[in-house]
Length: 223
Image (cartoon, rainbow, N blue to C red; front, side, top):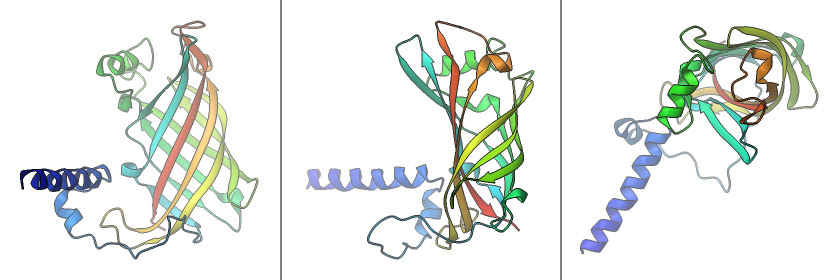
């Protein structure tokens, strides 16, 4: 009997933990109806046209940098906000504006995160935000394109291009507010050289100059 109760408690804990990871508390989760059964996970294929508010609970920016000549090391920024507009009839009208608080950097080690926020690296008190503002979008395929614009990092603004892949769009009615509604998503990747932005600590041997960036975005349609 005790083993059975322990097993039931373990299952409940796993389910509850997974629910929290989706950004919902237990009370909200209890009101969410189960989605219709499907044979497999699939991307929604609705029309992504519209203006969207970035869902910060389901979006993030990740980076990967070479560490001491041994291997790649990755981290992320836990906060991200902004808006983007998709126009499938005229992609030249697509726009995006993204704001990332530099202080939200997270590498799973508090002492390192504090050091990264210091003047040696991001200097977050002086340069609190990392921003991207698009200038044009050029389609390269049905669901892919190149997004051009300006990235401001560490007080330096430079032109940049992200390769973008649309990942899905459609009505998601079963999620509770504020997450449900008509949603769309995309993944954008690029590579920068951090020395271009005045971030030269531990060059050339300790940390690589090249930094690979991956931004995963989900947004809720607002217009």
